Amino acid sequence: MSDHEKQTGGAAFAADAVDYDLLAAQMQALAEDVESEISNLANASALLYQTLADLNWAGFYLYQSGELRLGPFQGKTACTRIAIGKGVCGTAAQKDETVVVEDVHQFPGHIACDGASNSEIVIPIHRSGALYGVLDIDSPLYGRFGAEEKEGLEKFVSALEKVL
Image 1: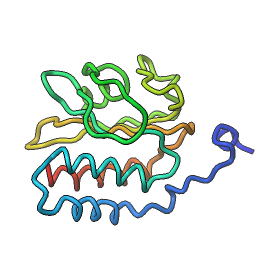
Image 2: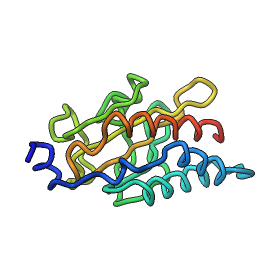
Image 3: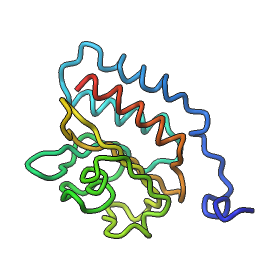
Image 4: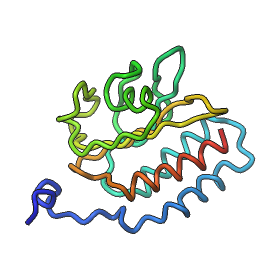
């Protein structure tokens, strides 16, 4: 058994079967004729949480007043404010790029909102070319997010940006 299989209990991620193009199309369909950004973000977090396997948190932090503030999400209670450059979310926002972390406990300055989280992916969201916020997804499994999830979730965020 490989180290990765030991860390994940030998689990095969159901995410391997996720059709991210379909997921993006579902997001666009859910947002059709919906003018409320909060409603669209709430449905987006629910769609991700229900579709992707092995998650313990999926949601948004919105860029407001120079910091990230908690937006709609699915999962346990969360940190309400994150400084730009702090933790995985703040780092993704500052660098304006997707950050994938196989083991959050090894990430310098990780903010532990839920001690059960072991891996994380954060994708910046833009509106009119400026930072709007980030999509934050956590998993209790180590190494849960790879290149396929990164590419697929970036497509999802691209579809979401069109309805914000």
